[in-house]
Image 1 (cartoon, rainbow, N blue to C red):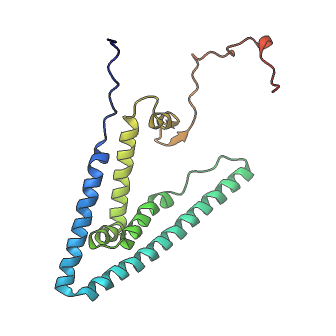
Image 2: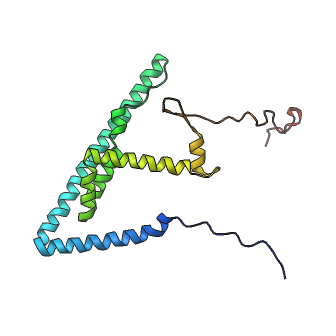
Image 3: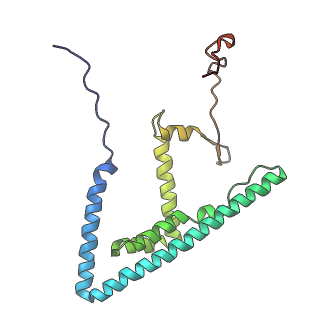
Length: 197
């Protein structure tokens, strides 16, 4: 009879992976129930008009947000090229462009395109600029908190280490250089193997 170490524990399943399938199922059931309730009250043609109108409006919102994102990207590249030609460091992106939350605007358009009245209502809410800004700030806080709680050695921890905060609150991309690391190569220079195949 052999005695060995106990089997390794399986990683704990996250709450998102546990409740996401249940939440999607509940959302689909509510969408179908709401569509049938509106169809019984106002007629099937009204439901069809609501779904087609949501799809058309969603496509227009996504197209507009995509054009705005492309214009912001082009402007950022142009400013960086102009700064490089002058021999300066590129300036920070325009605050109005970053505060615009194009990603949430596109998400609102996508939710409008998905058939259903609940997704249309959430998509319409994301079209309102104060709501979009509040959701963006909440998402930033959640991401910052998750990255701060990341264990060392994880991908989130590596990304967090590559960011350095300046005293004025700006985030500067950087690289961590450890001074306690050995500076010399682990083998003597004379005995380095040749680079021939």
